[in-house]
Image (cartoon, rainbow, N blue to C red):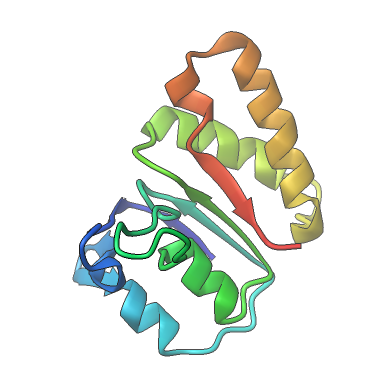
Length: 134
């Protein structure tokens, strides 16, 4: 699954945060109410791995909800992310178009692209991305 849209997190009520879609908001609560059988989800949207303030160790995020409900590998963002950076990271994570995508390689590819961006871009470009999964 791949979402490229706006995301937000309501720090005082994290379960109401989510993805802003053309026909409304897909909330964390709605995602958590279902079960999925997916190998990979890429959330190219802001704050998809941002938690709330009520529970210091709470993990109520879109990324965590997708992982909890069945997606093995999930890439999300800890705060606001630029469209250009999200596109560059997605391109690197998915790999060449003529090679079959392997979700198990996603954490390694994410690490590789973020290492490369760390050498050439400012901190805010590469730091938001995170991987949840094995």
